[in-house]
Every structure is written in structure tokens, then in C-alpha cells.
Image 1 (tube, rainbow, N blue to C red):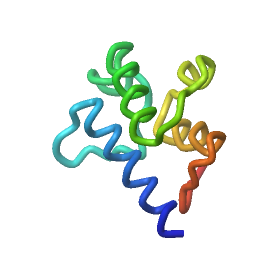
Image 2: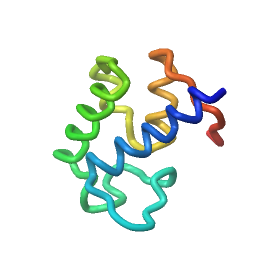
Image 3: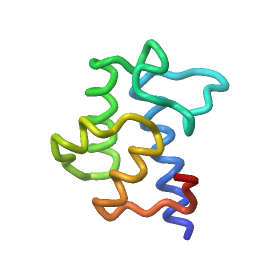
Image 4: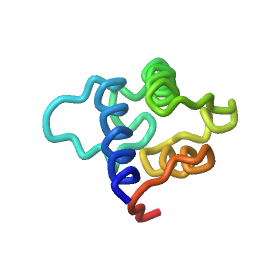
Length: 88
């Protein structure tokens, strides 16, 4: 269970780093183009950050389908990354 909690924290950090988020941004509620930083360029930076952090290579369809934090969790689960709790 600890690894799955760590994975969620790691994913939150991916979003914070890639999208250069500061302050009290609720990462779990983020959606693509919901904030200025998550545009097409920010999306590719985020994908690279996730791939490096979790040592995965996302399929093109998964890159396109990653439209929210929740979607990122679902997609990463396909690659064997476990998350403690998801509400989606």
C-alpha cells in the first residue's frame, strides 16, 4: 500500500514540476487546458516527466487520452503503476 501512496505523490510532483505549479493548486482536479500551463506544450512536458519518473513509455493513444489527473492515474495503472485510492 505504501508504494501506491508514494506513486500518487510522485504523480502529483510530475504535474507540479511539468506545469510549473506553485501554491495551493488542487492537482487531483486538473484537466487538460483547464489552466494556462496545461496547453499542448505543457502536455508534452508532462508526458516526458511522467515517462521519466515512472520509467514507462506511453503509447500515442494514451498520450492523447491523458486529459486529467484522474485519466493519468488510469493510464499509468495499465503500465503496472498502483495507486492507493482513486475516485474515478
